[in-house]
Image 1 (cartoon, helix red, strand yellow):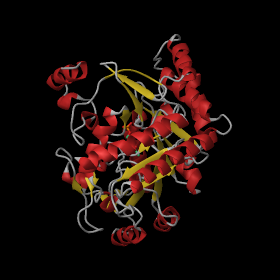
Image 2 (image 1 turned 30 degrees about the vertical axis):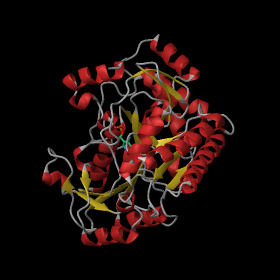
Image 3 (image 1 turned 60 degrees about the vertical axis):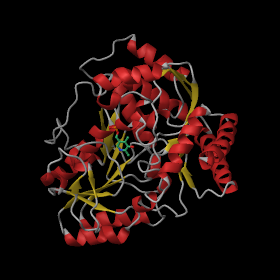
Length: 428
Ligand SMILES: *Cc1c(COP(=O)(O)O)cnc(C)c1O
């Protein structure tokens, strides 16, 4: 038994499923997760000394790769000055200003400790500001694990939400309406059925939590217009896309100004940070300036703020995003060719350095399309790649990432390994 398996056995005795976040347990692809001992650049090294080229990148935060020297130095120097004050510090102001420079729609913002907290707070604010209770989300979009978001659609577009998880009160789930992504008519129908009752539409502008799904060009302009027409707020959940698909996130790439935006992942550079922000007239309703309560013992943590600042700073070097996007396109094209060369139906897509791969014939525009993907093939390919030193997400339904630590040689190595892995997976 290797060290990772030993640790997993111990872990399962003390942590549910042996993990602190479900997908890490490898249930969707089979096998035993490796336990990480250290990480640097584009590589993870496990407890048995095996290294993997990492396309999970901590599920999004690590746009610079692991243990980037500039971030490490910022974290060290911040920690040496103490790591939690319970009082404001300069780094919070600096990071807030840095975020606003990159995303001007966040006229004011508030830091929290995770993406989940950010979306919870944004929805509370939207309900308070509009005096309405319903929210509209899209099938397959993930907005963290708060009760009201753990809801999927029934069979019809106007079906009221049913809880996805035991423990979510039906009454709460019924406040969440769902529509298929990229389906403007379904959104309009929900607004018609629930006049003056929808507080906000919340959306992942590029879906990244059921694999990667880009929006149709007309989708977000139509959402923006529908929200304005019906007095609802538009919330862009940019926890994944923020500082990832463009310097100013999806809202810059798409040319849409949301009322509220939620951030996480890159904004903390791999430390536990989330943020929500937007129109100043809305944000001024947050306590203590206004009556909408939201707080956090560790919010604005000086070490985490330093990591976020250093990470954003590195991405401001000239050509950073262009180089990253070019490298991602090299990967995506290579993977597409590898699949085509073996007659494996595959749909590969990307925006900036966020990308995804589905083994399906069908163009993927929404969750229902995504579900046609061959998950058994993905699981075999995942295992074959892992054996060849490449770590893809341990689920067919997750977006993947390229970091600035990935080199062209890493990309070409990955394409060659996918070539071989497809052969092995099909021979199976
Ligand atoms: C990761 C993610 C979240 C949740 O963030 P946590 O920090 O895991 O709570 C919310 N929304 C989107 C779009 C995400 O990708």
